[in-house]
Image (cartoon, rainbow, N blue to C red; front, side, top):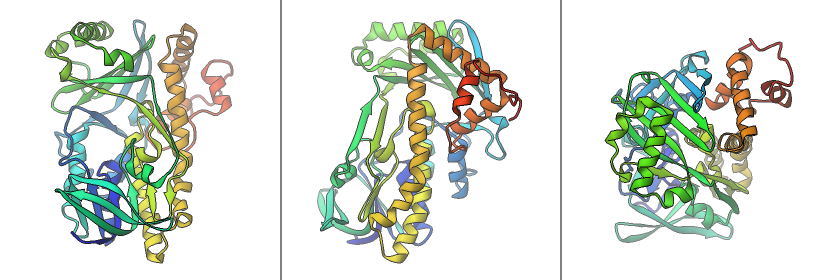
Length: 418
């Protein structure tokens, strides 16, 4: 192994992998370290939003995704449990060419990105490599200490990037203060055979502290996520699992037959939800991206996409810093200034949606229903929400006036303006 690189990236997740490709294609010498021996391939699924699609398209990777890895979804229907449809969001309203959502299993989609790294001659990827700490000269990061295949290495770099997730070891080694908040609820995830009616449509059901999402994924399958409190999941047994299946079938009767495939709890996984707010993302010779810097609630459907956007923005800034020979925090701050406003807006939006959508309060439920019904009739507001979810809008979807319109307290004479 070489002892000097231009950039060392710790973590081969979506942000780290995209960043490594972008830098390597500019001839920058990159080492990417990944703790796992091989990428995880479980049942997790995700929505590749239009902004993420554009990142992959710019890398030449969107059109080469295997057809069996993604499924095109056009519409998302929102329902109040037991009361019917509230609103439909149609991705066909978005500008071409990214006017659909791509639902996919996370593993195969990410593997497609990782496979592209093998063609880059200035990129080295080490799986099973453990980050053990930072090398410093004074306050400036000069490289990393790592373990690989039983051997310890000191590896120097002009820039170290922490792309190692919510519990980021790089962030901790840098001494960056961060608020790591775990939401009281997470999601039970699983896969079923897809019943009729879901070919290119997803369904999202909300109730009293109850959420069920249903997304079509490849191979005629249906991906579900069901809201559970962390305490409930910790104590879930066979009887409790059967009760959850019955509740899901009652919400959407078309699931009754497919749910019979699930006979054991270990056919599902539980995803806890976190928010990370880091005081800063940069230091002299180092930077953190993605969940290491700013994990967000999955309600906004942008966590992975924002890690990819971080990679795009940082690749531009890092190229300039490396060319000047200046990877100080002052030079790297351009990355944080560009990205932080959008990220913090999405984090606030995620918290707002968690407060309203996860609530058991009848008053709050009534408010949510009113807003969604308004959106169904109001093309302007619906488009603002859709473009925010799609990652195409930098500002909050609602101004104060828009909020008053959404709850029915003000008229909107521009409601038909998309």
